[in-house]
Image: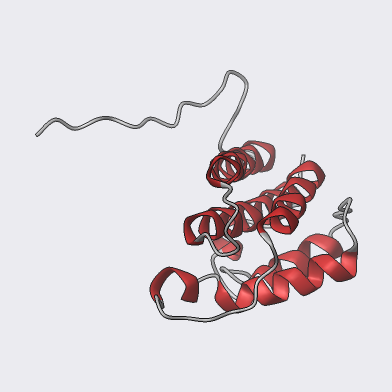
Length: 148
C-alpha cells in the first residue's frame, strides 16, 4: 500500500520557535479549514463537515491571535482555553483583538458553538441550534483578519 508524506515546510523567514511563527502556523491551518468549509458550503442548513471545519477554523484563528500576543501553546492546551471557544474569545478580546463583527453576535454564536463543537462530531442523532453557515464564515473571516 503506497503512503504519502505530508511535510509542513516553513516558508522562508518563518520561524516556528517565535510567537509570530507559531501564530502563522495556527492562522495558516485556520485559513485552510475555512477555505475547505467554503468549498463545502451547502444550501442545507446542517452540513456537519462544514460546521466541523468552521469550528476548527475559528478555534485556530483565536489561538493564533493569543499565541501572537504572548500566550504559549502549552497554556492554550490547558484550562481555561483548550477547546473552549468562549474562553479563547474572551482571552483574545482582553489582549486587544478587535473583530469587524458585532461583539454581542460573536459572543452569542461562540457560546452556541462551544456547546456543540465536540458533540457534533460524535452524536449522530443530536438536535441543536447553531448559527447559519454564512454567519460562521463571516465570523471566521473576521477572526482571521483580526489575528494577522
